[in-house]
Length: 177
Image (cartoon, rainbow, N blue to C red; front, side, top):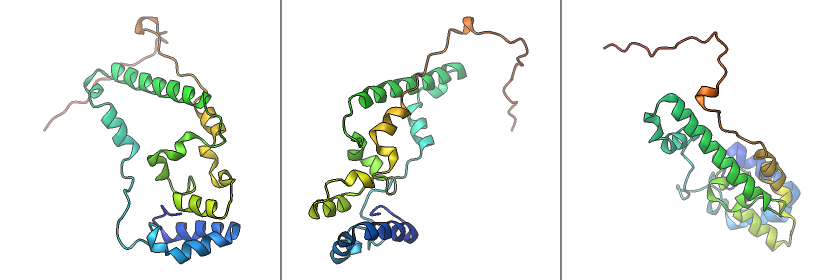
């Protein structure tokens, strides 16, 4: 809720918190909503997430975009395969109910995905040890492991591809001024 831009989002999640832990919302209100809530902030005080997925992929593939399309596709396939391998290995070592991702800054930009630091501090103040119940299922170790369990296999060499016989040749468009 501390990351909410819209009043509706803030009010919705603040209401949920006040029903579950009323003392926490009284404490947060006493502190001052403008000191910890993005929606109530007097000025821009936090780094906002502005990069979209397409921009990230463009930055990743800046050198590969000049390659022939088959090599570009192979670059993306190999990149995804590498990511899955790394995340699968990371997931195999997790032993907590919530993933390690809770400490990564970009994850905290997702609205209400994890209890923000302020809510965690209030939970500790009221000796509420089980804060993982407030974490969305997307950040549980079980979901993290299931997201990366599938294999991404490399393509066979082009000479080993099966030709169905009905393929059309696609030519680039004619470019005129």
